[in-house]
Image 1 (tube, rainbow, N blue to C red):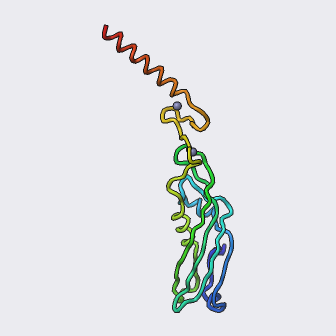
Image 2 (cartoon, rainbow, N blue to C red):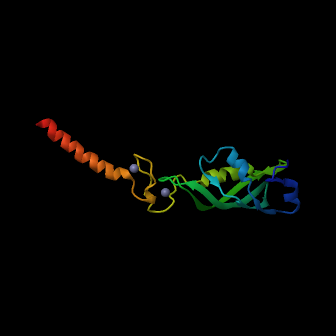
Image 3 (tube, rainbow, N blue to C red):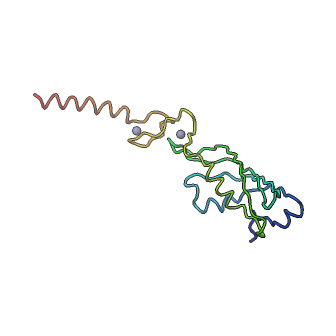
Length: 159
Ligand SMILES: [Zn+2]
Ligand SMILES: [Zn+2]
């Protein structure tokens, strides 16, 4: 299989530049386990522009799409758009430019460390794991009852 994101330097030189717009091999990146529980939603788009400058090839590009991310508080998977600029230089001596690794790195860099499904996400109950966005869980009730019971017990043991 021909690597999708490989470009011949001879071609770039002959045409004094090259532009490319196409999809990102998302599946390949995801299966390598780079993104943890997150994954880019398909399709992600890639725009590249190569130009020849002196003894180098300059690449300016942008990768864009949407992450599907687990919420940092409640773990609900939600989309978050991204757009990441890339800029690289490559020596003229090689035969091909393979930007796959650059795209991979760009995606790793733009992966948010923290993301909320909504600004006021209430998260999960630390005790029972219920999603508090769906309503209060039984724990708040139960802990109040447990509190009054404890007090009662203490009072009894003192007498
Ligand atoms: Zn959330
Ligand atoms: Zn709970």
